Image 1: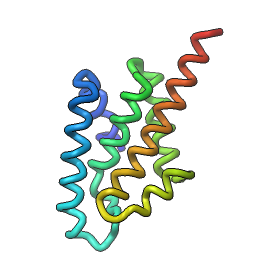
Image 2: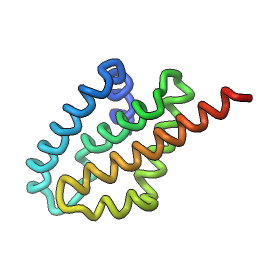
Image 3: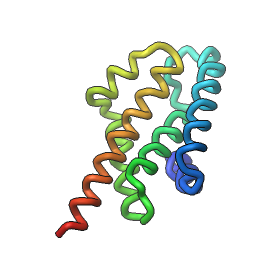
Image 4: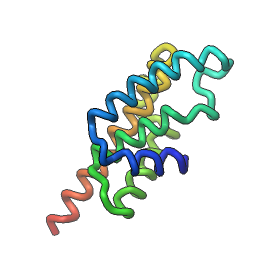
Amino acid sequence: SLVGIICPIHMLRAGWVLFIAFAIATLLALRSCLSEFDDPDPSCVIIDEVCGMWLALLVADAKTLPSVLRTFILFRIFDILKPFPVKSLERLPGAFGVLAHDLAAGSIAGLLEKTWKSNATRY
């Protein structure tokens, strides 16, 4: 999880284009390595969490430590609890399901943080 927060912070400057390239590379890497495991989403493979966390930070436009920490906590909550639609995306076959549920968790976490920040600055 620590890698999932440190790597995306350094990659934020690269923006959306590099994120999309990384997401495609992640999907290809997952397709290749998942055949080596019996578990459909092995805990030792964290590249999908890095990708989901990166998306969360991009969506949230997290630039301060408190914002990054809130986004990380939200991402982990949605990644672990897997509420709808995160759980349903996890059921997609193979690498698509492994990556899709982390991207959904990241999207939700990022949107919640962005909403919180915009409401906090109003008052």
